[in-house]
Image (cartoon, rainbow, N blue to C red; front, side):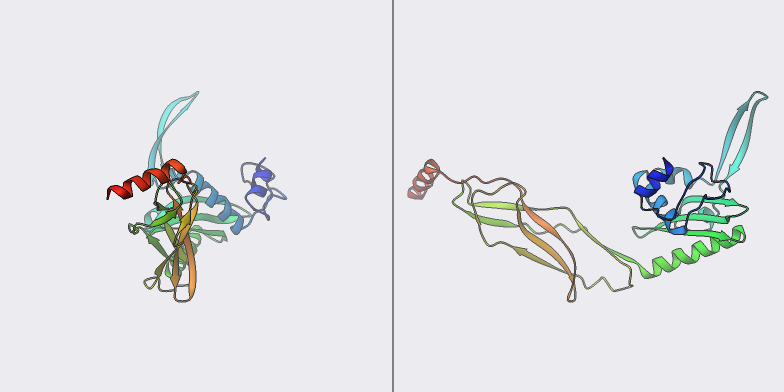
Length: 245
């Protein structure tokens, strides 16, 4: 079951022989595959960070000999050493050496750094820190959270003369090249006129984001409601209203 799930996640270089992670022939993985597994965990179950960021905790252990309390300390030292750390998991065996899948969040950007086969515990955290710092130095996030201007499109031959547009979500863009995102420009492209019938959710335009000559992406502008085609009675009513003006 674990191997089937790994294949579904695209972990092409992973093969599980046991479920405990202890050394055995044929039990292999890669740093990239561990990153894929980690990404699946933190995106589907973000509450894991509530546990992986605990530094110390007292545990009550009950056995046949009785009950005793003892303290546990997080083996992921980045929780105390790296200000943006959010987890995630350490591990070590005699063959795998010292490993860590380190997650962090800064300025809305979540990152994963995986270190495997470090010769000592200190080395894995130093290398993970270096990778995370490199990532945050190269990456920047643009999020358009501003309220967008109203879009109203005229409708011909409809029971209504116009329809209002709604934006299909918000736009964000992650740069991994260190480019300056302060010069992003927004361009609205909408149809000049619609002909009834108009369906609710019908695309009537786009809001496009440009950085120089490069298009970063866009969000659709959709009709917020349906507009039916006008019949004889609607035209008669419009004519009557016109005569009253």
